[in-house]
Image (tube, rainbow, N blue to C red; front, top):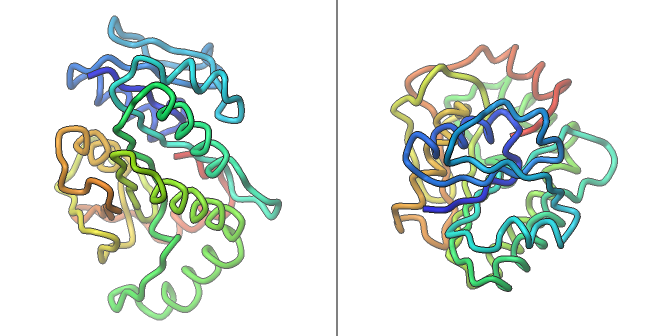
Length: 233
C-alpha cells in the first residue's frame, strides 16, 4: 500500500515510518526538514512539506492509498492551529484526489474520563493541570480537528493514546472504542495501532482508544516531559 505520513519526523512518526516499511508498504514521509530525517529505504520517499501550505499537502497526498497523521507541537499558552489547519488541508487534498483512508492521532485528553485506578494525585491534580492549564490550547485544537474529521465522509479513524512514553518494541496493548482505562501508551504501540487500521475496518469512522498495559513508565518522568518538553507525536 502507498501511504503518506504527516509528522513523520516526530518520535511516533519515525516509528510509524519504520514499521510501515518493515510491513512492505511504500512510504512518503512529509517533514519540514527532510535533511534531518534519519531513515533510508528503497521504498521510502522523503518530501519537504508543511501542513499550513495546501499546495504541498496536495502534492504529498496525490496518488496515495492512505494518509496517516502524527502531527504534534509543544504545549503553548498561545492559540494552536496546527491540528485543525493541518487536517483541513489534508481533507481538502484527499477529497481532490479521491484518497479515502485517513488515520490521525488525537489524545485521550480531548475527552477525559475518571479512572478509579489513577488515584487522587492523578485524578485531582495531574489530569486537570495538564488538560485545563498546560495543554489547554493544544487540546482545544485537537477537539477542533476531531470534529472536522468526524464531519467528513472519508474512511477515517481517530486514534486516542494516553500519556506517551518509549518502549524498545511493540507490546501487547489494548484498544477500545472512544475510551479505554489506561493512563499510558507507548509510541511503538501507537504506531502499530495506526498501521493496523489500514487492514481493518473495526474502527472505521470511529474513535479508537489505545493503551499500553504490559509496562508502565514513571509518572514523575512523564509529567516532567508533558509539562516542559515537546509534544511532538
